[in-house]
Length: 213
Image 1 (cartoon, rainbow, N blue to C red):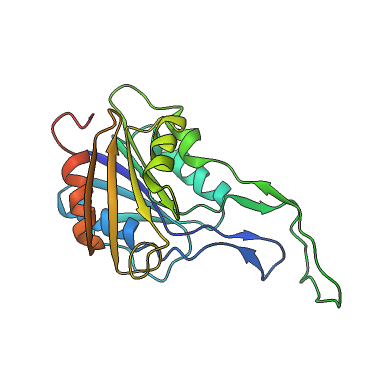
Image 2: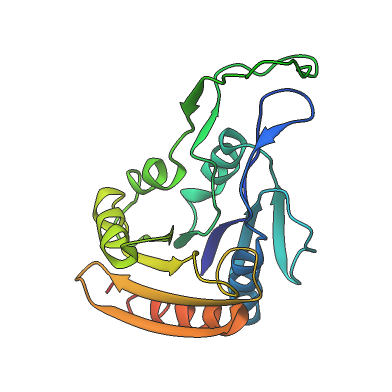
């Protein structure tokens, strides 16, 4: 069974040294990749910039921007059986990237931002029969409601929702607490627990017989 995963943040540069990003550590995606490889799956991990080593038995593809992440995923998506989009992709990028460092001035600085590519929605639209797509929804409010909406809007088979406003769990933390929602609307909760344990919980359900909820 072939598994394609994304992990970590992306960076969208406004000049050669400054960028828009987020606090994702990549631990959740890497934990899923490690757990999947330990189960004997053939794993490709497309990772944004993180301070983590590649899990044993996993092919690691390092990228920086959302566009680069989509390109790397596109190369492997058609042949994978399961795609799990864990990465916290930056939603916006500067409309222009300056060729030299933007110097500080006394006045305010305005940036024009444009949306980045929606990797999950783009790839899920290409899903073939039998292929499984799992999305992640990191939210700070109305967590389950927003996750259910994302599940439908992005054509996922499963969505993993977590509240990143809670200290000590979620983004840039060792532990996580999640809601796993399937296409039929059924929800299961797990955690707080170490991200490797959360990864095993997710794989136990997604890789169950038939995989489809």
